[in-house]
Length: 200
Image (cartoon, rainbow, N blue to C red; front, side, top):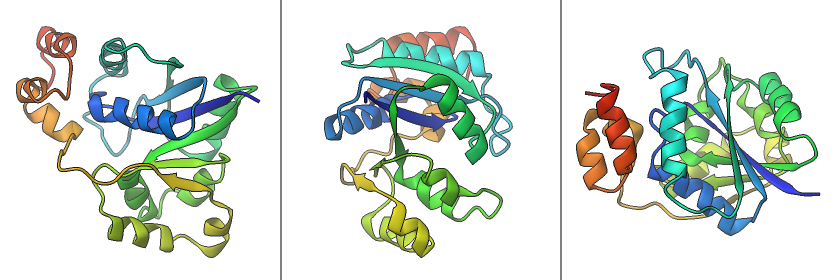
Protein backbone atom coordinates (compact mmCIF):
# COMPACT_ATOMS: atom_id res chain seq x y z
CA UNK A 1 0.00 0.00 0.00
CA UNK A 2 1.23 3.51 -0.80
CA UNK A 3 2.51 5.64 2.08
CA UNK A 4 1.24 9.12 2.92
CA UNK A 5 1.83 11.63 5.68
CA UNK A 6 -0.65 13.77 7.58
CA UNK A 7 0.71 17.07 8.88
CA UNK A 8 -1.54 19.22 11.07
CA UNK A 9 -1.21 22.73 12.43
CA UNK A 10 -2.29 26.34 12.25
CA UNK A 11 0.76 27.36 10.16
CA UNK A 12 0.65 31.12 10.76
CA UNK A 13 2.70 31.37 8.61
CA UNK A 14 3.95 28.17 6.98
CA UNK A 15 7.74 28.59 7.09
CA UNK A 16 11.02 26.85 6.32
CA UNK A 17 10.84 24.85 9.55
CA UNK A 18 7.54 23.30 8.46
CA UNK A 19 8.92 22.39 5.04
CA UNK A 20 12.07 21.04 6.67
CA UNK A 21 9.95 18.84 8.95
CA UNK A 22 8.17 17.31 5.94
CA UNK A 23 11.49 16.77 4.16
CA UNK A 24 13.04 15.16 7.24
CA UNK A 25 10.07 12.82 7.46
CA UNK A 26 10.52 11.91 3.80
CA UNK A 27 14.23 11.22 4.33
CA UNK A 28 13.38 8.83 7.17
CA UNK A 29 10.39 7.15 5.50
CA UNK A 30 9.79 8.05 1.83
CA UNK A 31 6.14 8.57 0.97
CA UNK A 32 4.08 9.46 -2.09
CA UNK A 33 1.85 12.17 -0.67
CA UNK A 34 1.56 14.62 2.20
CA UNK A 35 -1.74 16.18 3.20
CA UNK A 36 -1.54 19.36 5.25
CA UNK A 37 -4.53 19.66 7.55
CA UNK A 38 -4.56 23.39 8.24
CA UNK A 39 -6.72 24.33 11.20
CA UNK A 40 -9.26 26.83 9.92
CA UNK A 41 -10.21 28.20 13.35
CA UNK A 42 -7.93 27.36 16.26
CA UNK A 43 -9.56 28.17 19.64
CA UNK A 44 -6.07 28.40 21.13
CA UNK A 45 -5.10 31.00 18.52
CA UNK A 46 -8.22 33.17 18.02
CA UNK A 47 -6.23 35.95 16.36
CA UNK A 48 -4.66 33.77 13.68
CA UNK A 49 -4.56 35.01 10.10
CA UNK A 50 -7.50 33.89 7.93
CA UNK A 51 -7.35 30.38 6.50
CA UNK A 52 -7.22 31.53 2.87
CA UNK A 53 -4.16 33.72 3.42
CA UNK A 54 -2.36 31.04 5.47
CA UNK A 55 -3.06 28.55 2.68
CA UNK A 56 -1.58 30.92 0.10
CA UNK A 57 1.53 31.46 2.23
CA UNK A 58 1.96 27.68 2.49
CA UNK A 59 1.60 27.29 -1.27
CA UNK A 60 4.26 29.97 -1.84
CA UNK A 61 6.74 28.20 0.44
CA UNK A 62 6.02 24.79 -1.09
CA UNK A 63 6.44 26.20 -4.60
CA UNK A 64 9.97 27.33 -3.74
CA UNK A 65 11.32 23.78 -4.07
CA UNK A 66 10.82 20.82 -6.36
CA UNK A 67 9.47 18.14 -4.04
CA UNK A 68 9.54 14.38 -4.74
CA UNK A 69 6.00 13.90 -3.40
CA UNK A 70 2.51 15.26 -3.93
CA UNK A 71 1.21 17.96 -1.55
CA UNK A 72 -2.42 18.85 -0.84
CA UNK A 73 -3.78 21.39 1.66
CA UNK A 74 -7.24 21.21 3.22
CA UNK A 75 -8.94 22.99 6.12
CA UNK A 76 -9.84 21.13 9.29
CA UNK A 77 -11.99 22.52 12.10
CA UNK A 78 -9.68 21.41 14.91
CA UNK A 79 -7.39 18.50 15.63
CA UNK A 80 -9.69 16.26 17.65
CA UNK A 81 -9.38 12.46 17.23
CA UNK A 82 -12.75 11.95 15.53
CA UNK A 83 -12.17 14.86 13.18
CA UNK A 84 -8.74 13.50 12.29
CA UNK A 85 -10.24 10.08 11.63
CA UNK A 86 -12.94 11.51 9.33
CA UNK A 87 -10.46 13.85 7.64
CA UNK A 88 -8.04 11.01 6.95
CA UNK A 89 -10.81 8.80 5.53
CA UNK A 90 -11.89 11.63 3.22
CA UNK A 91 -8.52 12.82 1.95
CA UNK A 92 -6.18 9.83 2.35
CA UNK A 93 -8.31 6.82 1.47
CA UNK A 94 -6.18 4.02 0.07
CA UNK A 95 -2.96 5.19 1.74
CA UNK A 96 -1.10 3.84 4.74
CA UNK A 97 -0.92 7.03 6.78
CA UNK A 98 1.95 8.15 8.95
CA UNK A 99 1.88 11.32 10.96
CA UNK A 100 4.67 13.84 11.31
CA UNK A 101 4.64 15.73 14.59
CA UNK A 102 6.90 18.41 16.05
CA UNK A 103 8.20 17.41 19.45
CA UNK A 104 7.02 20.67 21.01
CA UNK A 105 3.49 19.74 19.92
CA UNK A 106 3.71 16.46 21.83
CA UNK A 107 4.92 18.28 24.93
CA UNK A 108 2.17 20.92 24.60
CA UNK A 109 -0.75 18.57 23.98
CA UNK A 110 0.37 15.99 26.51
CA UNK A 111 -0.35 18.67 29.14
CA UNK A 112 -3.75 19.59 27.68
CA UNK A 113 -6.46 17.88 29.72
CA UNK A 114 -9.16 19.14 27.34
CA UNK A 115 -7.67 17.28 24.39
CA UNK A 116 -7.51 13.50 24.12
CA UNK A 117 -4.07 13.51 22.57
CA UNK A 118 -3.44 9.86 23.47
CA UNK A 119 -6.24 8.64 21.20
CA UNK A 120 -5.08 10.98 18.44
CA UNK A 121 -1.61 9.44 18.53
CA UNK A 122 -2.95 5.95 17.91
CA UNK A 123 -4.93 6.84 14.80
CA UNK A 124 -1.82 6.34 12.67
CA UNK A 125 0.52 3.43 12.28
CA UNK A 126 3.70 5.43 12.75
CA UNK A 127 4.70 8.84 14.04
CA UNK A 128 7.78 10.64 12.83
CA UNK A 129 8.73 13.12 15.53
CA UNK A 130 10.85 16.09 14.51
CA UNK A 131 12.54 17.82 17.42
CA UNK A 132 12.97 21.48 16.45
CA UNK A 133 12.64 23.34 19.75
CA UNK A 134 12.40 20.73 22.50
CA UNK A 135 15.47 19.19 24.10
CA UNK A 136 16.07 15.46 24.52
CA UNK A 137 15.32 15.44 28.26
CA UNK A 138 12.00 17.31 27.88
CA UNK A 139 11.04 15.08 24.98
CA UNK A 140 11.83 11.92 26.96
CA UNK A 141 9.71 13.18 29.85
CA UNK A 142 6.74 13.88 27.57
CA UNK A 143 6.90 10.37 26.09
CA UNK A 144 7.36 8.81 29.53
CA UNK A 145 4.31 10.70 30.79
CA UNK A 146 2.05 8.97 28.28
CA UNK A 147 -0.03 6.12 29.72
CA UNK A 148 1.66 2.74 29.49
CA UNK A 149 -0.97 1.29 27.13
CA UNK A 150 -0.39 4.21 24.75
CA UNK A 151 3.40 3.94 24.89
CA UNK A 152 3.25 0.21 24.22
CA UNK A 153 1.20 0.76 21.03
CA UNK A 154 2.92 3.91 19.77
CA UNK A 155 5.51 3.46 17.05
CA UNK A 156 7.60 6.57 16.57
CA UNK A 157 11.01 7.77 15.49
CA UNK A 158 12.85 11.01 16.20
CA UNK A 159 14.57 12.05 13.01
CA UNK A 160 16.87 14.92 13.96
CA UNK A 161 18.51 16.64 16.91
CA UNK A 162 17.84 20.09 18.24
CA UNK A 163 19.44 22.99 16.37
CA UNK A 164 20.42 26.49 17.37
CA UNK A 165 17.87 28.03 15.00
CA UNK A 166 14.58 29.07 16.54
CA UNK A 167 12.36 29.08 13.46
CA UNK A 168 9.05 29.92 15.04
CA UNK A 169 5.86 31.45 13.70
CA UNK A 170 5.84 33.87 16.63
CA UNK A 171 9.25 35.29 15.73
CA UNK A 172 8.34 35.47 12.04
CA UNK A 173 5.13 37.39 12.79
CA UNK A 174 7.12 39.84 14.94
CA UNK A 175 9.58 40.62 12.17
CA UNK A 176 8.83 39.20 8.71
CA UNK A 177 11.67 41.16 7.10
CA UNK A 178 14.25 39.63 9.44
CA UNK A 179 12.67 36.22 8.84
CA UNK A 180 13.19 36.69 5.11
CA UNK A 181 16.80 37.83 5.61
CA UNK A 182 17.40 34.77 7.79
CA UNK A 183 15.94 32.55 5.05
CA UNK A 184 12.94 31.34 7.08
CA UNK A 185 10.37 32.62 4.57
CA UNK A 186 10.64 33.19 0.82
CA UNK A 187 10.68 36.47 -1.09
CA UNK A 188 7.23 35.69 -2.53
CA UNK A 189 5.90 35.11 0.98
CA UNK A 190 7.33 38.41 2.20
CA UNK A 191 5.73 40.25 -0.73
CA UNK A 192 2.38 38.59 0.01
CA UNK A 193 2.69 39.54 3.69
CA UNK A 194 3.43 43.16 2.77
CA UNK A 195 0.70 43.34 0.12
CA UNK A 196 -1.92 42.06 2.56
CA UNK A 197 -0.57 43.98 5.58
CA UNK A 198 -0.05 40.79 7.60
CA UNK A 199 2.04 40.77 10.78
CA UNK A 200 3.01 44.42 10.25
